[in-house]
Image 1: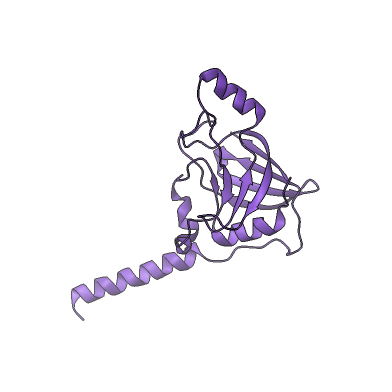
Image 2: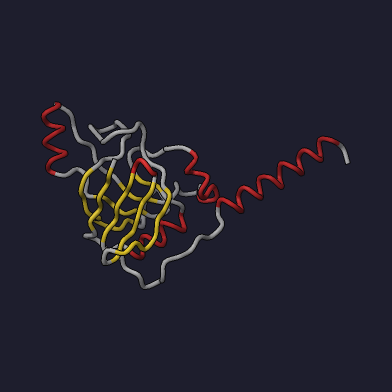
Length: 172
C-alpha cells in the first residue's frame, strides 16, 4: 500500500470515529416526561431541565459570544434573566427551535436608556439544517448569535418535554 493511500485510510477512519463519537446517543429522559423549568448556566455551558424541583437532565450547550449579558441587537451575546418559552418552531433554519421570550420589559428599558435596540429572536435550538452530523463537536466553541444550541437529538428531546410557557432562567 502506498503512503498516500495509508494516510487517506487513516484520515477516513479518524473522521468516522469522530462522527460516531459526536453522535453517540446519551441517556434519554422518559418519553412522557414534562419539564416545568429550564435553567441555563452560561459559565458552565449547561442547560438543565427540571420537573417538580427534580433535575431531569443536563445538556452541554454552545452560546453566543462574547461573554456577558446581551446588551443590544447584533452583539451576539446570550441574554441573562427570567424568560419563558413562547413557542415551538418546527420550521426553523436550525433542526428545531424553542423561542425564548427575550427581550423582557427590563431588557427593553435598559436598551432604551443606552439608546440601542435590545434585539430578539433568541432560541434554544439544534444545529443548522444540513450540519447535524457534527453532533456534539459543535460545543468546541461558542458559535451562536446569542442563542443556546444543543445537538439535534437533544433538541428533539427538549422540544417534546418542554411546553410553551415554561419558565427559562438564564444565569451568568
